[in-house]
Amino acid sequence: KRRSRLIEFGVWLDTRFMKGDTESYKIIEEFGCRMTGILKEWYANVGPVGQNTFHELGNTATVLGALHEEFIGDGALTDRKIRQQFLEMKCCSLKMKDLDKHYLRILKRFYLLNGLNDPSLKRTYVSSLPVEIQPELARMATAMNKEFTGLTMGRIHQMTQEVVDKLCRQHEYFSNMLKDKRKCAKACRKPFLKIKCKDKDRCHCSKKTFKGKKFKSHYKKKKYKKPYRFFKKKETRAKKPGQRCYIYGKEGHFAKSCPNIAQKAIKMITSLHLNDKDEVESLYSEQSSADEDTAFALQDSFSDYSSSDTDEEEPVPIFAVDQFDSLTAVVPSHPNVEIEVLPSKYEKPIKVIGFVDTGAQKTMMNP
Image (cartoon, rainbow, N blue to C red; front, side, top):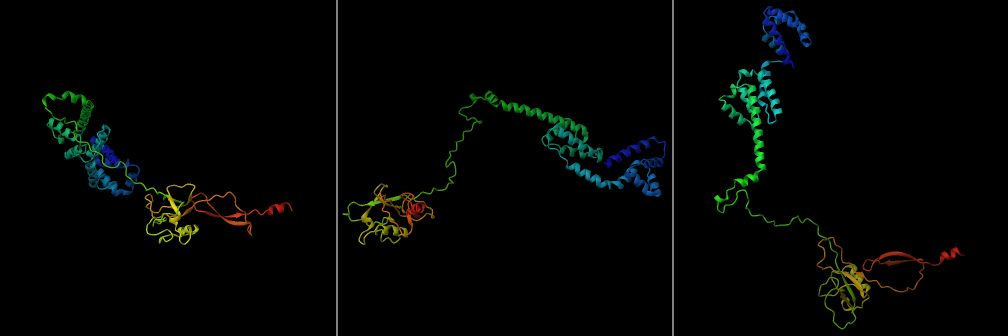
């Protein structure tokens, strides 16, 4: 804004100097009297000696140079900054609106840098335009037998607009051709000139066969419970039992003498009430499935269906349940008794406390 105001001051001073009816001293003195704002404060604080020196400057350029140095700074540094901005400015858009805006910004700095006496600035303007239109601009200048330095800025901008219009027409033409590609290909094809030649437009590459899984097999292995092995009492004891342990399925020893027998399995064998000479294998035989004759069941430790996880529990011996029609009631010394309840046939028994009805409530209600 300050540079714009200096240009306005220069216009007024040039107009007064051109008339020639007044001395330069009086014109500059009148210019000082017309000052307002900060300029008025500066002019008043300069003093009589400074004002007299200012009045004796003699021409417009000297007056504007003094004001520029006082309020804006060194003019050479300002010109250097404007030149750097001129060299760095660039437009990459092909829209006419953006090209016009770029032209006005360039034109403003072009005249501030005295571009009429510096033809290289015109080449800089051409190089700042989009890359797509620069080759066509060069061809148009060659057709006119002129260099860019010999053209005006307005003529260069007009050529730029013509090049953009030409590119738009070419783009529309080729777009329409691509839409009718099949129609043109059939019309231009000459099969009678070729013998067993492959069509270039068609791909004769072998299709790749898919080898592999469609989805990655990231899934957790399912845990399977060990199947049960069921046992029932043998009807005859004529045959000699085999040397095979029913608990771990290994040959060479019986279940009573198994070296790896667990505590729960020991309790199970003890509860069978066997004699010293009897073995589990001689009294019980294995079944394929459970039925009414099943005496007890064991989980199979060496089954193929067992899980590979190490957190699996030890095989637990499970007893069958015998049902009785009636039980003889035995009245204990205390009106409660410890009872083991089986939730199902093949689950562990649960210890509970059972309360016995002694008839005390009846006595208390009817004394």
